[in-house]
Image 1 (cartoon, rainbow, N blue to C red):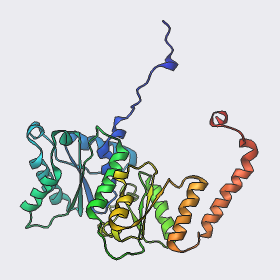
Image 2 (image 1 turned 120 degrees about the vertical axis):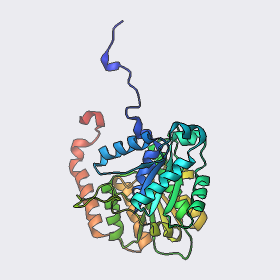
Image 3 (image 1 turned 90 degrees about the vertical axis):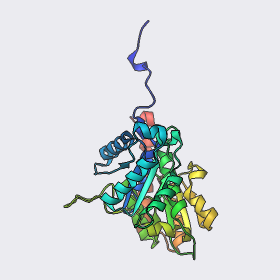
Image 4 (image 1 turned 180 degrees about the horizontal axis):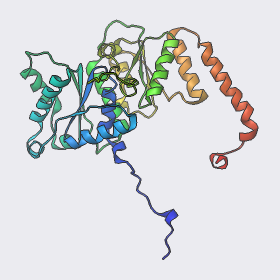
Amino acid sequence: MSYDRKTQAKAITVNACKLCNPLGASLVFKGIEGAIPLLHGSQGCATYIRRYLISHFKEPIDIASSSFSESATIFGGEENLKKALRNVISQYQPGLIGIATTCLSETIGDDVRLILHHFHQENSDSKQPIIVSVATPSYQGSHIDGFNAAVFAVIQQLAAGGPKTKLVNLFPGMVSAADLRYLKATFADFGLDLMLLPDYSETMDGPTWNNYHKIAPGGTGVEKIKASGRAQASIQFGLTVNPNQNAALFLAEKYEVKSYQLGLPIGIKGTDRFLKLLSELSGNEIPQSYQAERGRLVDSYIDGHKYLFGKKGGSLR
């Protein structure tokens, strides 16, 4: 029987870490000011995700772990999580700790909310940071699901209602640090007050430090997140976000914050929809610089149409 290497079957999963729920959640927590991610599970989970994020962003990243042992796997990880929280608070003095569960803690059924209730009771006489928890077992969904679940959990547990403001919430999904900076600049050009969650544009892509920071500067402030329930509107990028993980829909239902579901502003149509919405929310015209940029793109399409008309991707290689 002949064998052709070109038709050799290949595994679909090349890098399994990309499918990891807690990876997405850790990235979200890194986009909050003064926050530390803490994985409730084995040490290997935190090490694996930290290694992956460091190799991608080329930045120092700390991810704490409750470091399950054999006994914790059998009898539960309550004491491990309490100890991990005490250590993180002592070593980092964070403003927020984001707890993401792993396969192990989810499989044995650890009740993280109850553990946190016990922890707060036992440490009521000391100042404690804000603690947010999210269920992110890796045996369901992908890193994108973990990302969306963490954003939803942060909003669900921190957002508060009240008199409406001019604030606009933006949930951009998992985009690059450069994309986040561009989005912030765009909102500033329209004169809009922005709550961007998450914002890892500085924490994961900052300048070189003269002195080491235990927690990288930057990220979305907790007070800004709390104010999201008083915003005039929310924008969610991504038309396939699970409604049960959609922070904009949650704010619309609970706090009557108007929700807009948009695709990523890529291409002329998607960008037009986005800029038109910002113009309506701000009451300002689309800045001339954006109109000129759009015009140059259309002009380049016209200039190149005689070379590209009727062509498909394969014929352009």
